[in-house]
Image: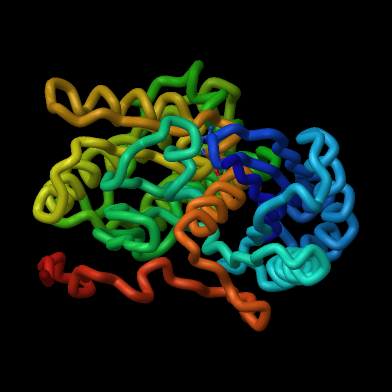
Length: 355
Ligand code: AMP
Ligand code: MG
């Protein structure tokens, strides 16, 4: 029997609705970006985001059903992002999801946004559990051992800025529109990555915790110094040097993450997900760094790397098939750890695997 999940995503600045089938088809994938609303502020304004979700979500869901050529009665379950993220938007999506579930009497499933990113590769490539995930987005930078549905082990994470946040902040310093990542990748193509040497924080340490705020500060200091001569070429060179440094940090930390991962799982699969995985330079650098090893690196297509509802619908489908539903009294969460019930845990900060 074929099932259909409706997914709703509203945890940041994209209002999204999607329908996926249990056969891994994406029947519709509507993403209404709020970039225009937030552009004057060069960053996401939570209050504006919540109101925009209110305005857009109804249309997004109707369009997702139309594109999929399905009615609400034909949907098997409703999955909505229940956190973490900007709470106003999460409340909007959660209430829509619960309301549709109440009316249709179909199961409601609250999805952790990070689980959505973590499982996207299973929707696209049917990747088998377990695998090592690098989640690199605007809000997160984490290495995670994905062991099975609902069983995730945090191996290491950024101690300050998320990697996408570092791209956005550097982009803002250089006068680019939000989000800065795509512009930096574009300008870096014409830049010399050797011109500026930036610090590779925490690359003298074992383990896969990371830090990007020192790098961001170094770029700021350089921009202030070069402000009189900030030619087009200098901007290109800053972008290339910054992006090169990020790739160097991630390559080293990936090698450290592999060491930890190998203590708990054997499957030689690495997945990179989240908005930064849209960066082809970084993906190629990471892939090349795996060189002759047996590891295979996958990353979802660009439109499924950044926030979308297909990943939420798919996580919902996996939970639906496993009979893991949520109660209608589920409380939306601004913070929601993916690791609340770890089967295996890493002792904070020590990287000692506690079996
Ligand atoms: P997400 O948080 O998963 O929605 O992803 C958004 C983040 O991904 C933002 O911080 C963007 O700057 C970043 N991003 C998107 N495209 C790129 C890219 N090509 N290079 C680097 N970062 C990117
Ligand atoms: Mg995200």
